[in-house]
Length: 215
Image (cartoon, rainbow, N blue to C red; front, side):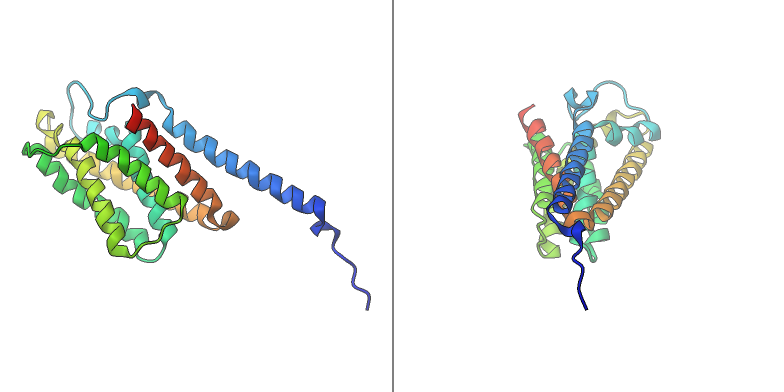
């Protein structure tokens, strides 16, 4: 029996696949870049002016690009690692963040918080970019350190809020939703192109952290 070669696997087919892959990568980079360079990027992490209750707490992580990128990265990294990490990383972060928030409310000194927030974005984005899969304990310790920095920064705000409890609840709920978004994005990008899209997005997130570090 004569075997007829499949012409679709020739040079032209390979070129088409390559061009499609490059196009997908640039699309992911463009979307992630849009998240970084939104108008609020020029604002400091700690907001100025009066703070309300639940609504203000819910809106704050959505409007703060540094917090948003870190929370998104936690979800993506957990999904990329797979197994229990899909839920242990996103659950651990807000729990530890509460402890950091209490420290901020009590006025316990914690130097280098803003530096820690910027480094959290760089580290989490890099972990995704390099598809780093450490043992779960190491990942949770890293997540916990960054969670303290994020929680402390927002805990400092709580005493000036009209309703600190409602503000905290709104903030935690919004954080959880961003984690869920990150998990969804991570699972969605985990298979296509052997995860290269997710890694490209992680690289862009890390660059966002470099921006906040230099700002």
